[in-house]
Length: 145
Ligand code: FES
Image 1 (cartoon, rainbow, N blue to C red):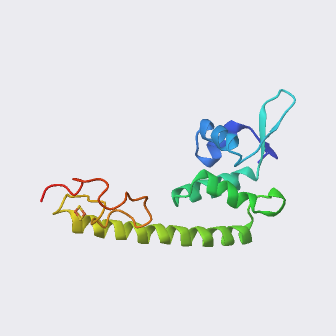
Image 2: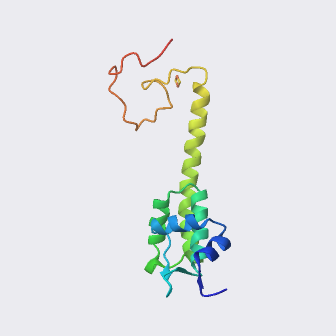
Image 3: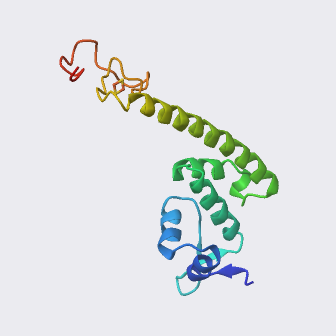
């Protein structure tokens, strides 16, 4: 494999669109240099970085969260095996938290199926930390029944 890759090379090897790579670059997730003809050139290690980004996206992390994690690597290096263990461990916990929240939301939805009031005051689907209106402020919101 050559030391430097074109954007097309990276796209093909990583299985992503060229536009995706441009987007990642615009968000600061990957960087490229320029050759004499002012064309983008990426180091080979960008493939590992793109792989990590794709996995993190599949785990539901935002690009901002992924960028922060990658920026935590010393000297902006590409994630090595030890880095990957640390990052994936943190992301696993984040994924677990979201799974638990989704299961809770699913169960609450089931309990609400026969109701339909979606009342701010009584319905468990409204998270407690939502900005709730003061009690009685939105009169008539309780719905029928
Ligand atoms: S819809 Fe949730 S309590 Fe009525």
